[in-house]
Image 1 (tube, rainbow, N blue to C red):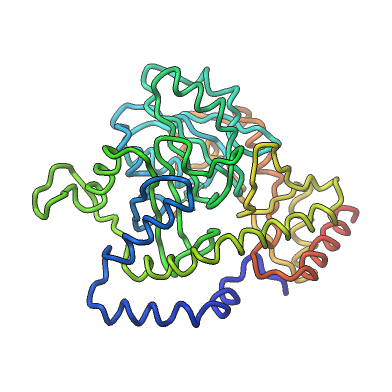
Image 2: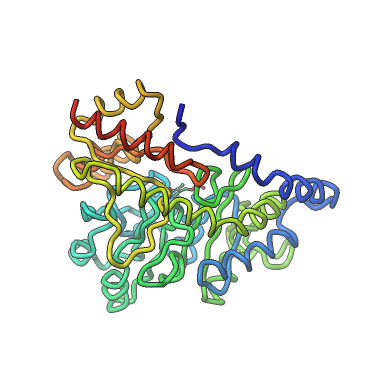
Length: 365
Ligand SMILES: *Cc1c(COP(=O)(O)O)cnc(C)c1O
């Protein structure tokens, strides 16, 4: 059996580094924020090409606080993609603002910058591109449109730790970058975690206050805040894992190259755009008869995933946006066709070959 992801094998490889850290934190008597989290913030910000980081309890919290810090509130609009994980738009909803959806570029699966301009209204308070599957959106045209109108760009980099756009790291290009450390992400905690990167001292102060009940000094609550703090254990664990991230990312990139070499072009292997260091959080192909492809691979003991089977505008939870089928045709076609193949650093090249062979056979069944 080739699993879709394998977190246990990775744990076995690093448990001798992780376990002493966990025991040290447990014995320290200090369990929320603290020195390990502060050190992780510095180290992860540096890794991501930003000055500062604010560590949180999830990627969704990162998006929520970044939007609030950008001033998004009741009645405002935030432009984002119709093809993403629901957390992106949920965070906009938490601010009582409205997600304004835009279709994707079918090659990159990321927001099509050419469609952003016409989505802007006087209520647009932020643009929220998503670096889907580990590849950044086409940021230069997005930043240019935003700059001309004074609209902040917030990056959803939850799938894009270490990804690059023309040499710039994901999360370092907009006003803020939002990361998730959900266990299955390229850098995963052993529990929940998230972080916002920024270079702006004023945003930094607001983000720090918002995550800790809106107070800089204990009990002096200046803002209506939240309990979104990162746990000390996760900070200590993520510091250890961050030291391995480049090696793991390069393994993903090597597996993707091997897949691309072996796979039949008829299954549309993912395209690495000219601007990208693609970090392959997800390796998605396309299958016109996806159900048959899934079934055939399952029959050969290969697990797959679908990211994502329903675009945002067709989700029952977001029917109040008033969209219908046909509104975002590229997102709809992607949702119908994409199939994610096994992808994790610890895969062996024999595993990649076995998956590729099975996909090629299924494509001609
Ligand atoms: C995982 C993910 C999130 C949410 O992160 P959590 O840590 O699970 O809250 C947001 N956006 C995208 C694109 C994601 O993949």
